[in-house]
Image 1 (cartoon, rainbow, N blue to C red):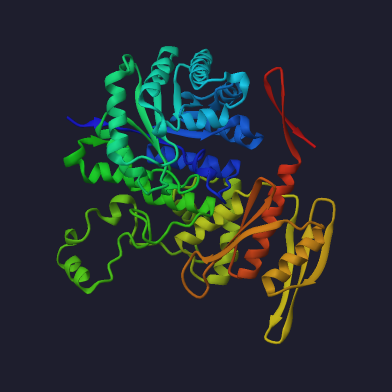
Image 2 (image 1 turned 90 degrees about the vertical axis):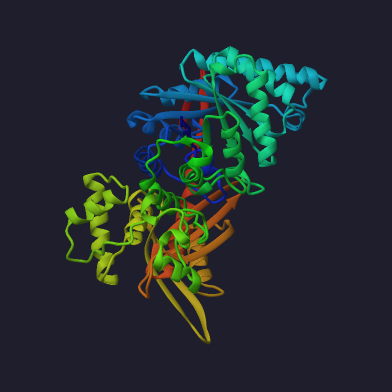
Length: 526
């Protein structure tokens, strides 16, 4: 008989930690709604103690969702209390706390003498921290998950002790992360098997796994873990996450479905929503899905070889083990034009997974008409860009009111910008090494601010000569990076909008501080 595997989606927490990914509260809320439509079992909504925006996002998602909502917390009382405060109105709250367990992490993070001089003493300290954290979380919430960070490189004997301790303290789910993506599938599967054998109270908790993709083995490790006793997989849409990313939700779900003859496991995921979810996450984060990405890449169901095409024409199963329609790829794309009404636009947005309010629908409709005048035909990807780039952009300090660029062969590139804020309008001109550089220089002169541009990328996000172009700019200030996205049929304008948005994010971040008073999170604006 088939057994159900729980899908724990951490796109909004671990996924957002991808270099360059940046989601505001409204974007997170929209993705959470789509994840609920995808029917994941758990949504890890964020790390509430880390920032006011994280706290607000988790709270808003928890307030309206029917799905289990998890909030991450270190093994510290303030983290756990803040996590619960963000989940207070959730119908199904889960506090997710963690401790480092590998010798590398223990010696690296807890080398201070106050934690004890020997490795054994440090390990005992971690055991007590883990027990206390879970027990404290349990006073707020019946559903508590504990993660043994870097379990993939943790001595199996000590790992068994940690997991047994966490379950004794009340953990209902115990997560075994391959934090650095170090393990091979056979090795990781054996670790789960050993835990099943050696942890005497393991039957009281669900075993979960969270695999990173540093060696490209995250999905394989996750499935090996399931075959050896894990019943929850932690993953992200499009496999996004820190470094090389996480186990990919769509690959795991479809592997278990297509090869049910071998695995004998199933998920409750609605696979027809996979493609829309992938597109939404890609659009909001600005992280492009590689064309040859399994399941959701543009080439996933493309066939160029003559032999393959001939086989496909005779029988699709010759080269396709699943159909594009099964994961929600709609071959028939509805084309909207300037004569399309609000109801038609709303219906199509709903089909793509978006649920705009009436106020937001009017905003996107106005933008849609403006774009339709330029493009004549508006496609699904155009609508996704309008939703991601325009509607859910948070209030900004500065807005690009006007841009004029003069450039050409034998001409010194010059840009003039007019930037508007609540208090005033600023206009400046500057030259540069090309029209984009001139635009950036003009913005810097207007704001008297020159950040380090860490990366700059442009791409076409729709098809044809009138395609919308997207620019993604990442700037850095010390340890913090800020990403801006801009779209337009004019790629220079898109670049200027992206740069200004990144600067806005930096300025807003620098105006906000976190403080704690009597163990309560205080959000302070300078």
